[in-house]
Length: 208
Image 1 (cartoon, rainbow, N blue to C red):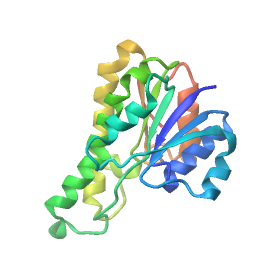
Image 2: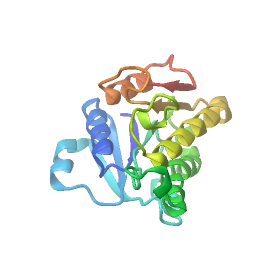
Image 3: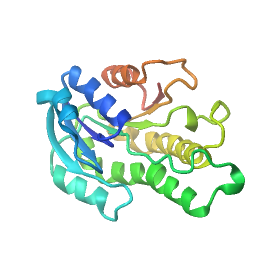
Image 4: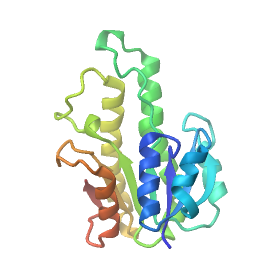
């Protein structure tokens, strides 16, 4: 059975991915700032192997999560933790603190955690890391008004994944970016993520 770690499993998008992976017979490792509620646990059933705390704003959170994982192999990691603070603010009301927090949570934290999990990913079978960028992170196509912290940090995350695809291709890691529907017209982004991971022909960098 393949194993996936999902950060932000306590969020709507994280739980949606967890349910889809569970339905596809994956073993789920859930990480989030809050424990899953009873309904969420029930919806994952026996696929949910363990829950761990993970707050991307907490110092040492990535290292703690990697320590919990130990030598266990990972076949995929889905980075669903995010902040959407300041999404409704116009440019003149944007503060430095809001932008810094968005870059920390939405860009730096996934990159740093991926680096901490590299040994576990390298031990997996055709490993993949999935960044949930959405329409906000696709430069020139987002129709969302304002949203400067989210758009900036998600666009940066998309570029980070391009960089990782070059750096990590030698050991077989595939870097998948879910753009939800920005370029693909996709209404089932979770299904497209699963399909990309399952396809052995998926290149080292792809957008779905």
